[in-house]
Image (tube, rainbow, N blue to C red; front, side, top):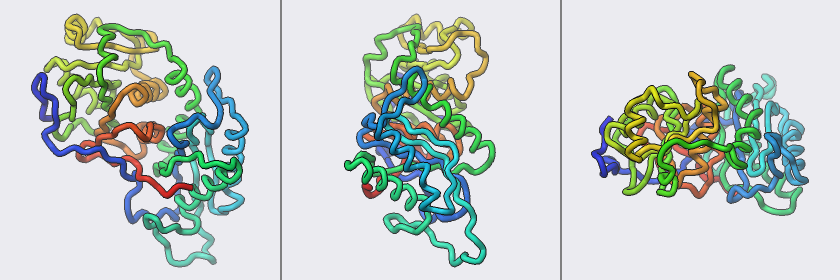
Amino acid sequence: MDEPSDGNMSASFPIRPRRKNLRMQGWNFTSPGWYFITICTKNMKPAFGTVVKGRMALNAAGKMAGQCWREIPAHFPRAVVDEYVVMPNHVHGLLRLLDRDAACRGPMEFEAFGKPVAGSVPTIVRSYKAAVTKALGEKIWQGRFYEVRARDDAARANIRNYIRHNPENYDAVMNGGKPQYLGNRALLDRPKLGFLASRGSSDLHGTLPVKPGEVIVSGFLSPMERAVFAAGLRHKWPMVWVKPWGLDVQSNTACRVAIEEGLLLVVSPFDSGVEAPSERRAAWCNQYVLAHCDRVVIGHLNPDGMLACILAEIDPEKEIVRLPGGRPAPKKEPPA
């Protein structure tokens, strides 16, 4: 990994904000399989209710959004609704497309951008959004939606777990997870650059596109995130560590020195003493980064992983920078 010198953390390659589709061109969206869908409200407006003590309290609009989701199979016989949740400003759902009946099977159709195909995932989502819009009498959706292919049992189990615990994680981040702090809290007043990367790669291609005065914020959990953290400690970059296992850093001399020099803040709502973070704790940390940072850099992204699920909830106005080799963020769809 090429590391920026102290005081100059600008990128060594062209970087532009990108919000393209997580879907790949040419993918057959009528093919059988499992899809994790996320649909957000316009401007992330909390239109469907609120979270109270870790449980979703739906208003009338939220109940209608849930009803329309449950009714998808009545309009699309190949679709099976699995785990889902209606949140204040988005809907998560795990959707399965069944195989076509052999007697009715014809040439496979491929979803082209802007060209609907009957029974495809984009067509199902557009129809769902239109049904909710019609029932409520107002346009409430973002123009885009997000989907991640759940390729195996492990991916589906992770997604179901993420959906079930989404209200608790949302409540902790949005309504006060009561984090504790160790270090220089003034770092939170500076512009913040979030860095997130899935497990599976530790190789950072190029350097982080950090602007002058920005603080790097991350859970520093994945190998790529830990590589950035190690480089930051060596080069004395200002950083905020959103830590999923408490504030204790006594065993790390470099962290203690960084705190003493005012270059590090440790943030955690969790008690110390946990050796390894659970998926829920890791999800909380990633959601904290997304909620509190002005810009977000995405490194390696596993399309079947938890980070891909969490990115679906990001504020559409937030700047996303994708490092070379990472997968892009979703593309805007025609409004429902």
